[in-house]
Length: 290
Ligand SMILES: NC(=O)NCCC[C@H](N)C(=O)O
Image (tube, rainbow, N blue to C red; front, top):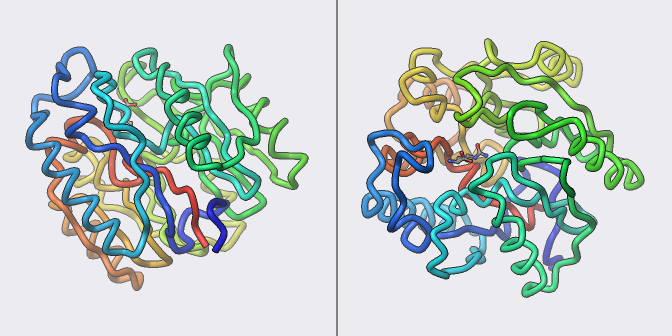
């Protein structure tokens, strides 16, 4: 079997990079990391264990980033410091200053696993994985916002266009301000190649039109649940087409996905996801989807 490669966000997840909250978050101070009052390190660690069980039960093999005591609390969100392609990994460059050491951890993990690195985004370029959405294997949509800038998008295009991938940048709104985390993936979660969960009011209009042109059916997440969850009702992980892991507590959004033919599993994540602004997609960096 191939050991790496992914240019889809819903093909069956075979191998994934994760980092436990038990190793990353034990001493994190909420005020330093922009976490909400619901953050509690011990509870976040247990909730992360529950997510890891669901991911493993889906059939994916989990690779652990590191268990070093490095105080990098946000490194649990392994989706963001690197991007996987069919041609190797791209090591990214973080927009959040406290996360700047994380891409080096990913580069080291790829070296250890023998996975080639196609290239790196260099300062002043910034790209976070949460801003990158594979619309199909030849189209990468990238949100331009507080975490990802134009210089980074140009560098990404320079790496991917020779491989036949169009890289399309879309402006994101500011929403809750520069300190908060709004990625393109905060407002869309692909559920299958032809289906995506969206919060349409915050989608870049041209991106919405692209999804419609490509014939991607849209499931609209419940707006009140989006507001109540700080957007986390929308960040769901497809472990295979229409097989989804979501944060518990948002029954209307889950029902909308089920009505569209999805099987939805949930886990409690108030201390891990809602407090720390990242959901199950953000907590996983797919290494192999096929
Ligand atoms: N892809 C994602 O949406 N990642 C969430 C990252 C949350 C983390 N606390 C951050 O601010 O970067």
